[in-house]
Amino acid sequence: MTEGTYMPGDGIRITPTVLIAANRLVDMFGEQAVAGVNCMGFAPDAIAAAASGLAFNWNRGSYLVEAGAAIAANQYVMSDANGRIILYVAGPGVKIVGFCVTGASAPTHKVEVFPIPPQP
Image (tube, rainbow, N blue to C red; front, side):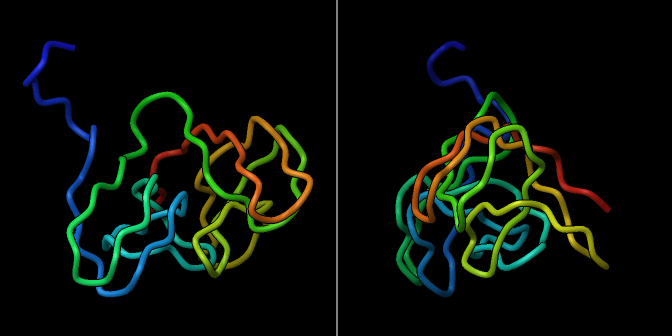
């Protein structure tokens, strides 16, 4: 990529209404994700309420995201109530946000996730 070239989805400047913690999922409205929602990406750094920050779109490669519970590798994942990755559990309106490549033995560990585009 040439410096200064726009690549769709490289990063999206957002201004959340509440704090987004570092390494958490970001929903389609630019807020920290809650349980089971579609996600547009994740915030690698914390973004304070009413402050501008950069969230990365699910568009290339894999990302390190915080786990909300212990999780085995090679599993489909969803967002928990705090914007962390947990094992996907099917239910009405629950969305898969990615495929977990690495596992986590406990909450707060970082897992490598290949994103899945938002679902209708």
